[in-house]
Image (cartoon, rainbow, N blue to C red; front, side):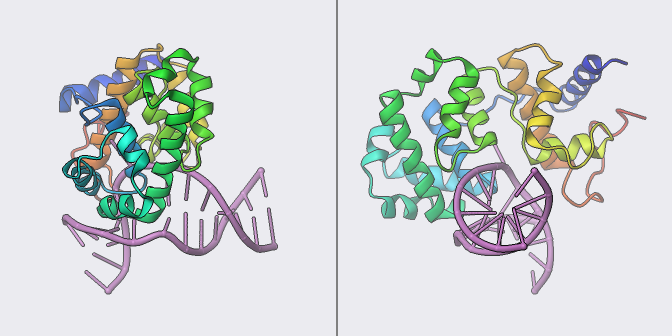
Length: 216
DNA sequence: CACCAGGCAAGTA
DNA sequence: TACTTGCATGGT
């Protein structure tokens, strides 16, 4: 079986088992981007609380959040953890949005994907996964998002070495798959769902994985 | 109680 | 370059 069919079969196995995902959760591209920063090393349920706080306070839009004092912002995003750090990162991102995008993420659509990616990576607090999540899920640009689950699932099924880094993992998908936003979106969403429900850090908690018989 | 969750940057050697 | 550490809340 060649590598492309391997990946597509893997995708279909997850899709058959779990159904389509309708991702990323968020009402607007800006909310998606904020969620991408808040979810760094945090449980999504806690990010939902933080976003709920921002909505309740009616501050979840670029201009209002830019003007909000950082201490007040930190207070609102507290449930997401690392709250002072994340308030600072959101402020860096908001300054970028104001200065480079006229407060509108759609401005990134004017650039090539990798150029937009480099711009985001220049923001302090935005690393590869956060940048790619914003590009794919908020801007609908074709980059494959890698996360902790991606490497864990692939290495546990013997497809890659455990120490494979972000760029290599991303290339593993992007060198093979067609450049398709919908495919990249659903593929990553399914990997996260499989990761959450079946592929915990402890290898023992890996029963009934949709990919369990995938490579037998 | 210990461990974990959709990372990232800064410091050390 | 390759490791290590700080950042923090809330669920299991």
